Every structure is written in structure tokens, then in C-alpha cells.
Image: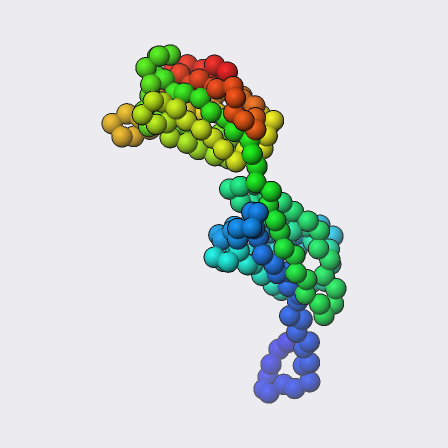
Length: 197
């Protein structure tokens, strides 16, 4: 609109959009600081929000349509479909089922000598870090909250002068390990070598 002076007759209707709200929990416990994402493939639009200390979230300003709502937490993920209609918000509580997969074992520097304070990382098939642990005084480590019976890539970094090292004997080549619900089969990690399930 080119204005040469005061202009009238421009009527604009503002659409505030709808909202998806709810609470994120793991069992009975509310989860704060979790990212909740809503996306509509049909509309090619969406939004997101971070849960507050009470696990509550609100994704606002969404046009009417069907959305996939997903939440990611350190305990696991969950998602569902929500349909927003004109003039109506929707409540979608998301309850994450805690993943019970475990990988445990010992980190050594030479196959027998315990490596204390080594950093062990577990990555899923998408190369996303899912858990980490630091070995104790006996070299023992335990990764928890993993999907049971899933394959994870483990990487371990030895502690040298209080820092984790990726060179020489400070790094064990990554290896694929399957998690279990009881962690019954220990996975030995030898710095500068490969893991030994």
C-alpha cells in the first residue's frame, strides 16, 4: 500500500492460532526442560516449547490441522497425533516409558589394570549420544536408560591428567554393543584397543 496521507478502509482479520498444551511425565514424575515439538506435514508448519519445572508445555499460534507431537527426554521419547480445529485448543499429555536397557563393564588400560575416571559414551544408530558414564575406582561403568535389545556404538576416553584423551592409549576404537534389561554380559573396554563383549 502506497500512502500519500491518512488511509482508511484497510480491514485486517488477525488469526491468533490454536495451542497444544499438556504435561510431560516419566512414570509419575514431571519432566522439566524437555523439548516438545509439533509438526504438520500437510501444512508444512509447526512449533515447539520447552517444559517448565512442573513438566508443562504450550505450543501456541498453530493453524488448524493435524500435527505429530514428539518429546525427547533423557529417559526416552514418545509421540502422538493431535488434530486442532478452528476455535479449539487441545491438551495432549505425554507419558514417557523409561527405557530399561543397560550396558555395563570395565575399562582397563591394558586388559587388567583398571582405568579410573574414563569417559564412556553410547551412541544410537543415528549417531545421537544416548548416555554417558565415568568409570569408578575399579574401572567399572554402567550405561542406563537405553532401549533394550538395541545396538549402540561405544566410545571410551581415558583420563590423562584430569582430561579425557582421544589419542594414543587414551582412546578405544568404537564398537557395536547390544543393550539388555539386566546388563548380565559385561563389556570390557581396553584403551587403545577394541571392546570385548
